[in-house]
Structure formats: C-alpha cells, structure tokens
Length: 163
Image (cartoon, rainbow, N blue to C red; front, side, top):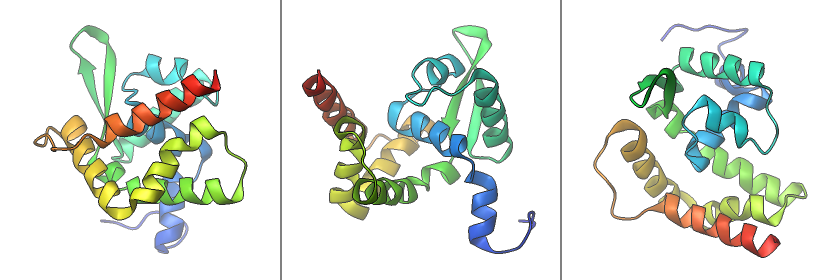
C-alpha cells in the first residue's frame, strides 16, 4: 500500500481518510442505521447533511475503499452502498468514540443508548457486531446473534420513551 498524505504517521493517514465530520457520520448511518441508499442517508440524517456534501462523501468513501457501490436492482438510476471490510473494522473506533462522547459531552439518551450497549459489551460485542455487518454487507454466513437487532431495539425503546 503506497503512502499518501502529509506524513507516514498512521494517525495522520487515518485522519486524512476519516477526519472530516461527515465521513464518519455517513459510515455511522450505514453501519448503525442500515441506511444504504443516497435517499435514505439524506432523509434520515439527524445532523441534516446537505445533499451536495453527502454526494461528495459517498464518492470519497467509495474511492477510499470504505464503501462499495452497486446498482439498485429495483431502480436502475439508484445505488446501494455497502460497508467494506475496512469500514467494518472501524466498529471498535466508533464504539470508543461513542463511549468518550458519553463521558465527556452531553448526548441525548436516545442517541447514546447504542453507544452505551457497545461500551458495556466491549470487544466481544464489537466482534459479534462486525460478524453481523460482514453478513449484511459482504455476504458472509449469518451469525447466531443479531447485535444489530439488539441495538435497534434499544434505540427504538429510548425513542418511544422520549415521546
């Protein structure tokens, strides 16, 4: 793999791939929200991503090998985005970011419930979630446990309690 960027520091190189706010938000929404199309990513964005920024980030993430893009069999002009192995391996990083955010910021209960479950479950839960993401995005065999369903159920319960 050739070195590209300002330096060969692995932290710098990672930040050059993921360092802008929207790239990780898009990956988060594909990963935790199973939002796989441009329309779903745009309409369901809690942060209100602009259409031009979303289009740019999808192109960047695809070019970087963090997302793959396939034609939508139901509509020729649309695409389905999938996580790649490289982006699935970001689960521990996102789990740690969520844990840090829960400790050092004021997140909403409903939007931090998944982060709490990932923090409490630790590496064994992260591995199980990554196995499930490999099934959902890379056609790996289905796992016995659905972490996605557990995370989604906790989120939906928190949203219902909100109101």
